[in-house]
Length: 94
Image (cartoon, rainbow, N blue to C red):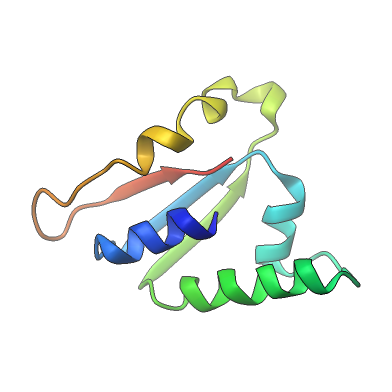
């Protein structure tokens, strides 16, 4: 998720809606999961730092069994380039 958030910031994305199939990541972003792992806490802090650079951010959990397209889109979305100012980019993150 971090590389894709950085790419969105580089593209000057203002509004980002993330649809993912990882319950752990989604719950970390929403801060509804507690972890003792320093690695996961550092990951959470880095994600939050990047999210604050966006004007609007949302994340939604879609279980993999309900959305098979989640598996095919993550790599494609990192190849977006800025075509014009003020566009909406939906980024699907696995």
